[in-house]
Structures are given as C-alpha cells and as structure tokens.
Amino acid sequence: MQTIYSAWNTGQPLAIGEKLRRVYWPVILIVCVLAAVGAATLYSVSGGSFQPWAERHTLRFLIMLAVVVAMSTVRLEVWIKLAYPVYGIALLMLMLVPFVGVEALGAKRWIGAGAISFQPSELMKLALVAALARYYFRLSQDQVRRLRYVLPPLAMICVPVLLTLQQPDLGSAALFIALGLALMFLAGVPLRYFAFGAIAAVVALPAIWSGLHGYQKRRIEVFLNPGTDPLGAGYHITQSKIAFGAGGLAGKGFMHGTQSQLDFVPEKHTDFIASIIGEEWGFTGMMLLVAIYAALILMMMLMARRCENRFARLAIAGSAMTFFVYVFINLAMVTGLVPVVGIPLPLVSYGGTSMTTLMIGLGVAMSAYVHGRDGRR
Image (tube, one colour):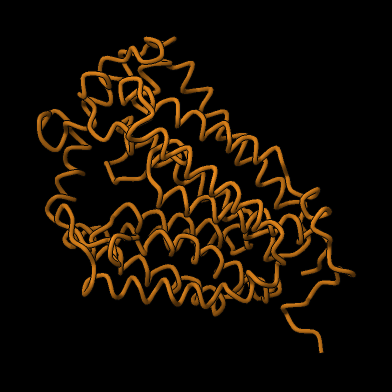
C-alpha cells in the first residue's frame, strides 16, 4: 500500500550524474558571491588580514558548499521521515538550555560539550521549516483551510517561541514567528486567520511588554529615541547610522571606512557588517547587495514553483523565507528601523552557527528541487 512517503512515482532512482545535473547551479553561484562579499569585508575590517575572520569564514563556506552539493543527492523521502524527529530533538534541546546551557552576556542560549558549543535555536530554525512542510504535506487544500488544522502548526510555532523567550533570545523568537507564519501562508491558510492573530497580538501587547526583560525594554525605548542613551544602549545603532551616512552614494572605498578601521562600530564582523559595507561602498554598494539577495530569494521561489511535490515546494520556500527574514531583520536593525535583536547578515557575517544553519537549509532545498519535480501532492 502506498504511503505518504512514496506518494509520488519517480520511476528508477536517479543516477548521481543526473542528480548533479538537476542541481540549480545559479543559486549555488549566488551564494558563492555572497560568501565572497563576506570574506572581502572581513578582510577589510581586520585591517587587511585574512586572520582572524576571513580565512575561517571562507573555509567554513567551502566545507558547507560541499555539504550542500552532497545533500542534493539525498532522496526527498529521507527529509520527510526526519522532519518530525529532528523537530522533537530541537525542542528537547531548547528545554534543556535553562538547565545545562552556557551563560554569556546574561543569557543562556548555548549548549556546550567540551570544546564544542552550539545554539539549539539554530537547529530549531531548520526543524520548524521541515516539520511544517511535513505537516502540510499530508493535508488536502480543503483541510488546510479548516480551523482544526490551523491549530497544530500554531502550537508547533508557539512552543519554541516561548522557550527561546525564556533564554532570553528575542531575535530567534521573532524569526520563528516570521518563518512559521510565512510557511502557513504559503501552504494556503486563509488570510482571515492571520487577521484574527494580528488583532490578538495587539490586544496582548501590554502582557508582552510586561514579560520582557529590562534590557529588552531598554532596547525598544532606545529604538524609539536613540538619542536618550547614545553612549549606552543606543551606541550600536548611532555608530551604524554614522557609518552609513559617511558612505554616501559611492562609499569611501575598500578598507577606507573610518568607522570600521577605528573600531567605532561594535560587532563589525557579525551583526553590523552591513554598516561596514555601507560605509565602504555607499548606497550603490548596498543596493547591489540587496539585489543579490533578492535574486537568490526569487530564484529559490522559482525552484519551489517548479516542484510538484508539496513537501518539496514548502521546504524550498521555507529556506527562501529563512534568507529573506534574516536579511530583512538585519538590514532593518542596522538602519534603526527595528530594535537591535542580534540577527546576522546571511553568508556575509562571520559566524559558523548561522552559516551552517542556512547552508543545511539550502541543502535540503536543493535536494527537494532535484527530487521533487516528478511527484504528486
């Protein structure tokens, strides 16, 4: 009897050569361009040296690029079978963080094992997309529209949100909400449910505000009026805006940004790397970078549209939305449009955890594209 794991008929298994031929190589090219931009910027902010960031960034990317290509050859049903177990593991790890987590800067977000440490919320970003894609894979379009089938995915989103808020990690919680709602929308959930949710969120704002930590409230207050604490909580965004303003239209040139070279911009190699690009390459350079990200996201959405299998479509679209949410929040954060929440710029910022998360998500998406164009559902 045919199961949901074999709900499509692909005929004979694809040969490795055929799988590699089906890989959407333009997307691979674009992520290489983004990683190169990151390496060049990290070289600049370290004063013209590949150490300590640019070399590691490049090496990590090359390793993960090989992983993406290898993952593209994995059959789609493997990811379907793994979706719920991985979500369960990620959820368990989030539950363990308060008890065994490593505290840094007043928050417990990491689990350490000897010299190795990782952030469970990063695994959850992958697991949430896969689990929601797996959930909607088995539903008909009529079922997707019914309230009883809207509640389980909401629970799948809310539980990790509440757990990450306890760490506290407002950035990851916001990302979970954005990703989850985006997947629900792409799956065909009616807009009226989103409208009801928005109204409920507005009504709950006083309770949400009272539940925030003191430093989180301070970030929001400074976001609304950065001038109230320019040397404290408002320092990051103030220096970031100065860097963007100094860049003007064409920028100061590679390695000529004073804000970065004189270390005025905090976290210049991670969360605020866009400020350095804005100062060195100006508005023109930033618009070019945004265009590269837009091309990547649009190409991935085109990949999703070409797939007949629903899990494949949602897995690819979920990976595309992960990139979009990362880019949107980071650029809005460094320009003062949203409070500072600590979200890196995808494949450009230095950081092994975020790069690993994004590239594994891309690997699943590429596997879905290679194997999901011949299926039903």
